Length: 242
Ligand SMILES: Nc1c(O)cccc1[N+](=O)[O-]
Image (cartoon, rainbow, N blue to C red; front, top):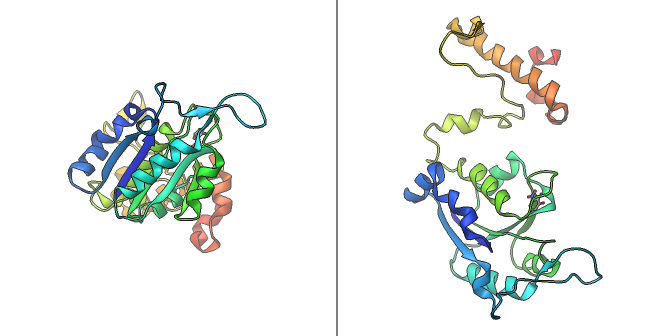
């Protein structure tokens, strides 16, 4: 997978070259290219924004500079892109979105700042490629860069070969529609708290049932919306207690 990120703060995306993602890039599983939006400005101040039509606070990012940048970046690789624009007004980015993005050949991220990017940019490219405006949560950030770090990590970890143990991705929270239950490791007793006996029993059936019950219990308590959204056939008879 090829990942391009257009931003006025390329340094903010440096973590994409660290750790798991760095190893995935070194292994050729993903290619990450960072592009400074200001490279496509033509004035001494490298202006990327202007006052909003209709008035109001803040500034809006100019369509001209974004058009030149995205034309150049998209043309720099032959793989067809999905353009992703992180924005507070976007559709919610979920594990299902991450799974869908993991099947893409190429993701091009446009990081907005200020009050966002002139809407005509999304409208223009939507006529040529799939374009998604996505939100990672209902809170206000200063720009899209932090969201790109979240999205790229959630997607890249699903790519074959990126995670050491492929079962990890299959058994994580949300992978079966539920939150993960509690996890324990040695020592057996820590500050007077013992690891639940069933986990030390060696009875794999009982352990699986216990883990499922804890996941259902936690999901019912913290995210009843996830439980309500589960298809009927995803809950077995023993699950009905939740
Ligand atoms: N929430 C937010 C924002 O305020 C600015 C850019 C991107 C996002 N987001 O992806 O959630």
